[in-house]
Length: 332
Image 1 (spheres, rainbow, N blue to C red):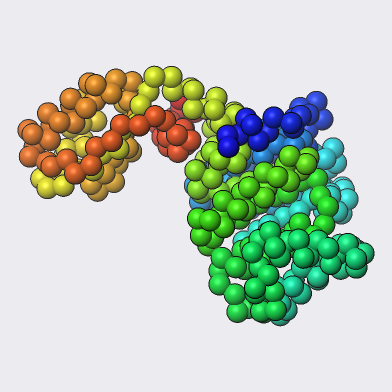
Image 2: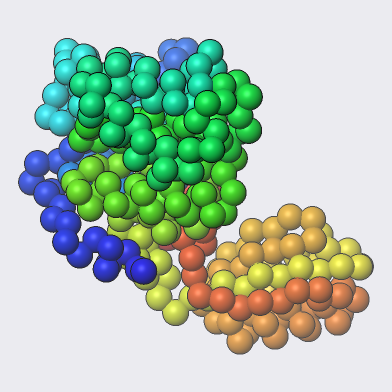
């Protein structure tokens, strides 16, 4: 099922955003800015993705939006409120799944019950929600097991499941699928989609770009505290028009020299991201690029182990935007 069909019955209310930020800046030490002029809005009823490398500023931004820190400067509104003045009111209307542990002192069922009690959910409603969540997140068989004794993936499922014990308007998810297998990861993402269809707004951070492509309506690419790109996922992909991505792996010879010569041969019409023996190439002219790859492999006696041409993905968008940032330009 594609994103368009899943989201067809949801109206995104851009006139009254769930979150708005204007020129946010934050420093922990008074010198380096973890956030450096960040501006964006999150629409009600959408999944908004935050993509970036470790240290890019994603966690700092999440902390600001969830009232854990107060930005050094700039304007931030969450559900129309100022986190600096209305932190408690905001916290009553949001959910947050961070990368901390579950309540290890109690069972899986106890985790859900504790959360229900903390949120003041009446007992009958609490039991109903608990049983539904145990089934949805496939935790019924371990319901009596202490959280301390669970696997990493099971703990993650408990952390996400317990957040749904209470009603909320915005859910913040900080890499929620870490430690989950492929089937449970997809189950979790589909559960989030179902809640979004009922009106939930989600802010989602992940290192898995396939997940962001599957789940998010819009994504912001962040690097060094700045937003490099922000748009709907499909629009970001279309920015590259007729460009193609080539995956290349080589062996033998001198791969470092080979990739350097290949970069020179392709010039400005292609972007290369390389490691010791592999490269991801974004190119305007796949035919010319393939010819250069083959010709240089013969000249330098390098063996081509893997060669694949594909259409662009969100990962290619991410790599391209960060590379332009490193080259001094934020424009693809």
